[in-house]
Length: 122
Image 1 (cartoon, rainbow, N blue to C red):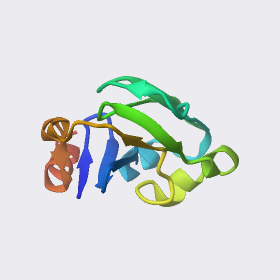
Image 2 (image 1 turned 180 degrees about the horizontal axis):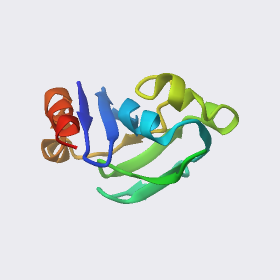
Image 3 (image 1 turned 180 degrees about the vertical axis):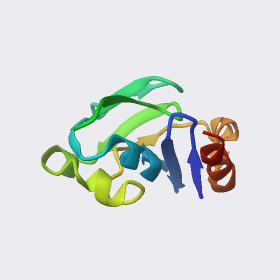
């Protein structure tokens, strides 16, 4: 199951890892993505920490962590192919993976239906 933030990040729990990125909506709004600043592996994050930046032909947008935890992997493919986010924002375009997170923090995030409703309210 995916969870979403009002800042258009998504997170999906896979065993003891939380995979995160920006939503398809965010990727579409940004347009052609030209650069992704990835977090450092080993970084300790708390909810709301800036963990990177996505730059496009239109704008630069900060990426915030929807969960606290430790960065254990980054999507290095984005360094050479940032457009993966445009092509597959919620799959191949993931940004990082976290461990050591508190699942209770998921309660503050939206599920798919809530996110869709949120998008309609914009």
